[in-house]
Amino acid sequence: RSLRIGLIPGDGIGREVIPAGKKIIESLPSSLGLSFSFVDLDAGFDCFKRTGAALPDKTVETLKKECDGALFGAVRYAPHLPSNDPSNHHPTNTNPPQSSPSTKVAGYSSPIVAMRKSLSLYANVRPCKTVLSPTFPSPTKTPIDLVIVRENTEDLYVKEEKTYPDPSDPTGKAQIAEAIKRISSKASWRIADIAGQIALRRDKMRKASGAEVSHTKSGMVTITHKSNVLSQTDGLFRSTAREALSQPHFNALKIEEQIVDSMVYKLFLQPEYYDVIVAPNLYGDLLSDGSAALVGSLGLVPSANVGEGIIIGEPCHGSAPDIEGKGIANPIATIRSVGVMLEFMDLPEAAEVIYKAVDANIAEGRLVTPDLGGRATTEEVTNDIIRRM
Ligand code: NAI
Ligand code: MG
Image (tube, rainbow, N blue to C red; front, side, top):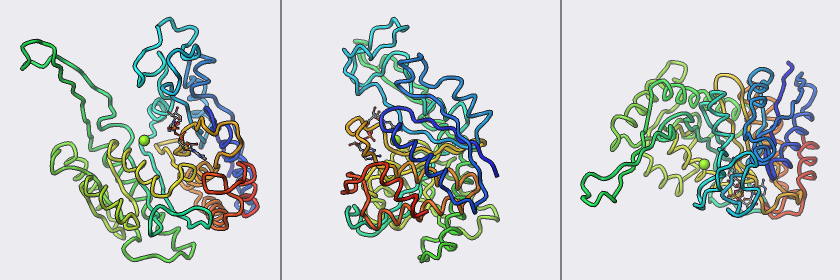
């Protein structure tokens, strides 16, 4: 099988970790019978400053027409630039830089959000797994191995907001702001369906790798919602997800549901309980960052953006300006993202080769980057993982 992979390093350490991901793909054992070709693509803040576009049309077109998969590094967002920085201002853009600390550079908006939209990447999948390490204490008492499956197209993130004068205020100064929370049965169904497929695949991969399978954790999906309060929106998510997960091919799975606030509580106290968590966009966003904290370093946590066509692997971290250019960024989040990308390309054996080599590198702890208490460089870690593959 021959596959074409787009490489989108973006900004900051994205340019250090994406080459590591590429090297890993090139080093997959030939016995897998795969051949890869690559295409370099542009996106991000530096790209915006150079070209006026954070996500050039060419990038989207190439991803759509040529690529089976892609790796996205990280992008820098403008709030980290002081507002008087002259580069905080595109030359062709005559608007003055906005002054609020939270606003972005005029004309600049997240290429990731745009990419998810234009390529219909409706699911964000984030596996969080502990590997016990001699150099780095686990933040949780018991190792965790869970996946957050976040709906990516709707909910409050449709960004339909408005602000208007509060009619109860005679001075006319008070305001009211409103946002639409939109939930559709179509999006809820497909996200629950993909969560079910992930749970089945994880169970299969666990059994194939000879891992001990604890009874409660084998193939479980937890549907997250707040339908006790939001009976229509979250109610629709809940009932649709229930229905999708009651399809006969999911019979082997244990299906549960949990109200999101009590889920946060349990995620803090007993994270090892969970297997696959499926959630609408906003809760999924919060739960995914919370879960990443449970494994201790952003440098370890991968993700994949999944939809009808292309699969895009993406480390969860940002552009890390504090360590940029030092060659010490942990490549593991990206390398694991290669694994998740391959899983969704229906290549679980290739993914497993990568996961095993990564786990062995962390467990030995000899060649790990400073975020894991080591002294190794991005390149040394990558080469150690390749040696183990
Ligand atoms: P960040 O994830 O870039 O960094 C947070 C902390 O984690 C830093 O101390 C950093 O050195 C460390 N870290 C992150 N990745 C690491 C790695 N691979 N190896 C070792 N240490 C690592 O988040 P921060 O500092 O809040 O944001 C920096 C920039 O990145 C901002 O412009 C932000 O908007 C953007 N960002 C982009 C994201 C994306 O492209 N998906 C996600 C999060 C932030
Ligand atoms: Mg987030």
